Image (cartoon, rainbow, N blue to C red):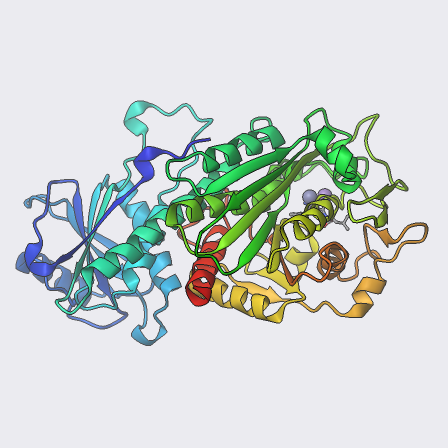
Amino acid sequence: MKMKADMITTINVIKADELAFEDDETCLVVPAYHKEFPLNSAVLAEEDEVVLQALVDKEIITGKAKQCYFLPTPAKTYKGVLVLGLGKRDALTAETVRRAAGAAATKFKGHRVRHVYLDLTGFPEASAAAFVEGVNLGQYVFDTYKNVEPEDAPTLVSTITVVVGDDVDQEALGMACQTAALVSLAANGARHFANTAANDMTPSTLALAAEEIASVADSQCSCTVFDHQMMQELGMNALLGVAHGSEEPPKLIFLDYRHPDAKRTIALAGKGVTFDSGGISLKPGSRMHEMKYDMCGAAAVLCTMMALNHLKPAINVIGVVPTVVNMPDGKAQTPGDIVRAYNGKTIEIHNTDAEGRLILADAMAYTVEKYKPDCIVDIATLTGAVIIALGHCAAAVLGTDDATVEQLISAGENTGERLWRLPLWEEYEKMMEGNHADLNNIGPEREAGTVTAAAFLKQFVGDTPWAHIDIAGMAWGVKNVPYLSTKHATGFGVRLFTQWLLEQARESG
Ligand code: BES
Ligand code: MN
Ligand code: ZN
């Protein structure tokens, strides 16, 4: 499960007078605000400007958000100029730039562009990082299982050169862009894990991927994997009950990132059901294949750890991934079963399809006891109900720690991975009380499914400040975001978590 080396873009930041176009694989990108013309560029050749202005006059180029007009320049050393519509100046956000860049990435692919020059001389320098992210995310292709003719292999952008005005700190901007490049590649890594078919992406594959993440040069991260026997000795029967129906052995993965100057320790837990058939409470067949994505929480945690291990912020982070396959079988867990979780609480299984909360319960109860983190955040494709509540527009966030919830919401605004808070009142916890055991694993049918799932998880984090993110609506199937593709996983969570943790490291450091 290696990341493709050819996806790594080189970033340069230069001043306008240093500009020299390399070759005919180069494209100059000139941003434009909606209906603000002439174009604001310090580096556009006069002949190109004349043609582009004529297209503006004919209202072919308008600068509307995401509009990408590619003007080929066959007589020049470079391949063409792309006018990048950013929409209204007052409405500009990082997400506008990211989406425009995602649309541009499609054009770059179509025109086989390898080198991109982005002229930001007349635009906010903060756009540079969002542009890098949008291009990297937009270029992601998943062709592992396709027979692609060599001549049809996609051409990817290998360098992005940002052209800035004289007052800009080139080094600082270069660093911000490098971080953006790395984080977007980590997000692509999560997309890749998730897109990989469940026959290749098993709990054992995830464990190997975690070991690889910990074994890079200069690693500050160590990896521990608990196997079936170890979990049995520890009494993790909630997790093991889910694994009973599958031949694939379950794993509990820990990635432990340490920094000598760290003031805080944060735990991230990600649901890693590499396939969720529902178990004996079998799911309907029509969209069951999508349940290979039921490990998107795990992918987000692992790839966040990958990013941290490269960026080295001053914070300790424990990434925890409980991972199993949920299958029906002669040995599978059945409705009515009662299991005793790691923290001693007993759970009556009323629906074997509510399995994510069971594996997270043991993973989180163990993590808060063993590592005593300052806070724990879990991320999971936990409930179909969150899609009813929020659609494919935001993930739900719930929790006991208002500060963390608010920080996460704000990181979501900045990264475009939006979160919306749902309540977690006592009444919901009552709804999860068991008849024959302490807890039921499901609440009353059709009522507040996302909240009752969270109310269940709350019973396993003790007094540790905690937040829960339900990404069932955002992990795949997101429409109309140019840097994502509807058919594939989104990598949701990697950019959000990394941004939040980098901020936490800065503030506590
Ligand atoms: N992995 C599913 C949740 C899910 C469903 C994610 C659809 C994305 C799309 C989870 O394990 C599950 O099956 N949840 C049940 C819970 C119910 C039995 C209380 C659900 O949401 O139906
Ligand atoms: Mn399920
Ligand atoms: Zn599931």
